Length: 97
Image 1 (cartoon, one colour):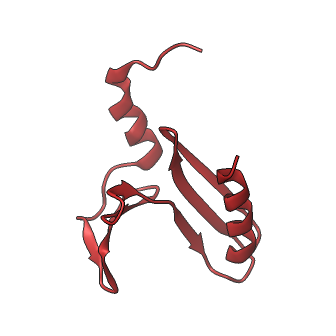
Image 2: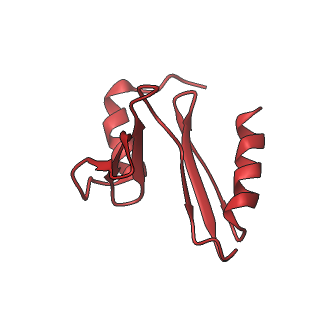
């Protein structure tokens, strides 16, 4: 595997995340969390660990759920026709690898 060309990282991020569609905003229930919407995702910053955390998107009907997170410098995701509790178990298993 060849090394990533550092000058391409901003373009790859734009391809994955899309352009920002909002300003960063504090979570009204938790001032440690800051969210920012992008065309294809939502960035979630957690000031307690000074890191970006994964995000679980769910309608809790089982029609569809998705989770995204950063792992070892990569954006990782899982999605499917299942409830958030089921998806969370799968994500925890994947993160434990």
